Image (spheres, rainbow, N blue to C red):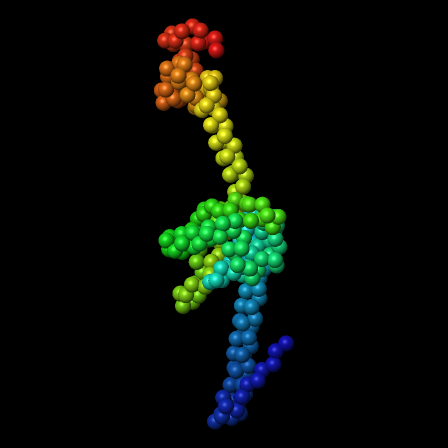
Length: 231
């Protein structure tokens, strides 16, 4: 419910009869229209806020926002999966507290500065609530107020632990293949050579660049000793 408080006398002074009544009605209609428009804007803003909150709370990546002093203002619920903390435990804390190496935060801010306020895919280690390090990739940008003043940073944090572990395993496998004394050849499904190790190169005389994309039948070209084909 709403109540009009209009000084009709100030508006209709000098008018009388039907004209004064008409003016008062116009004033009432105008005030009603203004109030209705404001109420509609409020409803739309609340609906938009609910939509944004729903999106943030269903994101796999973690959304965060900090103030100009790098204190956490907001963080989405997925942070509990990522780092073990509830949002309530983190709001108000300095973001640097979550870094394994505090200097990483300073390098991140320097990178934001160097790139004009936007960074994508910055990799760093954060500390889980249980003390374990967590590899993440951060994409973020500066926040500015209406006057252009820097007021904080917001962005998303993605868990890249699985990809880091897979890369490490691949590196170990690659190292093992490179050092193996046995000949190793890897082909795709169509039988085209994708990789051979140094032992293959040493025994066959073929360099990796020569056999990439070739069929293993090239080894039966008659250029090698018959004993090689029995390997």
